[in-house]
Amino acid sequence: MSNVKQSTGSSEAHCACPELCPLNKVEAGCSVRIKRLEASPEVSHRLREMGFCEDQQVRLVRQDASVIRQVCNVRLGLSSELAGRILVEQIKPAKKAA
Image 1 (cartoon, rainbow, N blue to C red):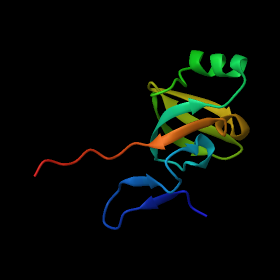
Image 2 (image 1 turned 90 degrees about the horizontal axis):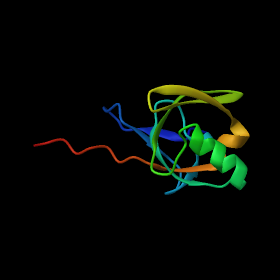
Image 3 (image 1 turned 120 degrees about the vertical axis):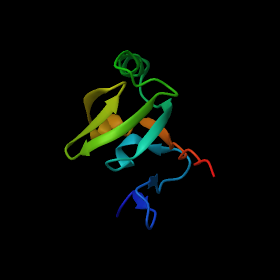
Image 4 (image 1 turned 120 degrees about the horizontal axis):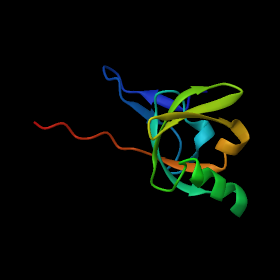
């Protein structure tokens, strides 16, 4: 089942998850904002050191056995299990000027 819905006639990707969803449930091309880390304090600290901070924008590059994310123009790989500990929200597309 797809976790991203494509708008007909548009290239905008939308996460089909509720307001907050795990990072490992977002499909390629979807940009999201990190809202909460649900890992141990040690793991959360390490994730923040790697750039996975609250309110940081990330984009999924590829997802298979590992999850490749782009954070601050750097591509990082995470296990799917670890990515599941990072809760994100969809970034609303910017409204185009009329």
